[in-house]
Image 1 (tube, rainbow, N blue to C red):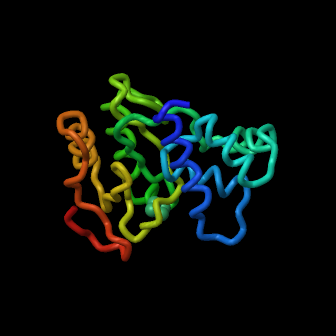
Image 2: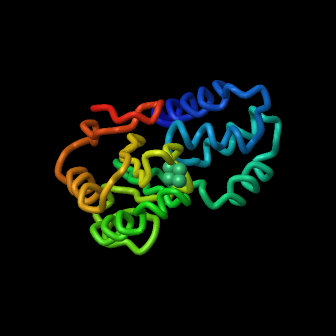
Image 3: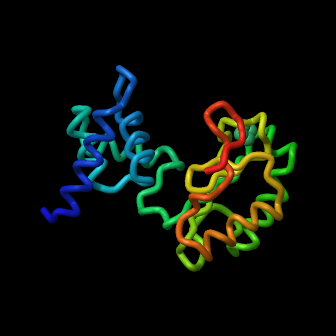
Length: 176
Ligand code: FES
């Protein structure tokens, strides 16, 4: 086993065993892995099976049932636009149109240059700040199409997306 694979397995095990809930299931474990590394590799399915005393087939069954799991690593940056009711009503369609147009996508997926993964989200948990988008897990609230486009263009130009204005855990704007 290479060091890289060993490190991946260690990270996966840590994600599975650090779940806060007392009830640990294959689904909760797969979600924990996806939260930690952004996707569910074959190694994760094997580790989840081991640690939840399930079969690999059972875990694959759960993973493949839910369309939200991805099985390949995401791009360097991830952009999500919330498509929940509040965001939809308050302007998400124009934000979405601008981003998809810039990335030359018609739906979720990887931009042609491979640098950005685009995803829909059903609620980013900051409805009071709708419409909301997320850039590498930093929430941007009350976002307008032009601003969204600026952030996405910047991701292409700069390394990292650390300097975004994001919403803190209490829904207030913060400077990152
Ligand atoms: S509906 Fe968009 S953050 Fe909740």
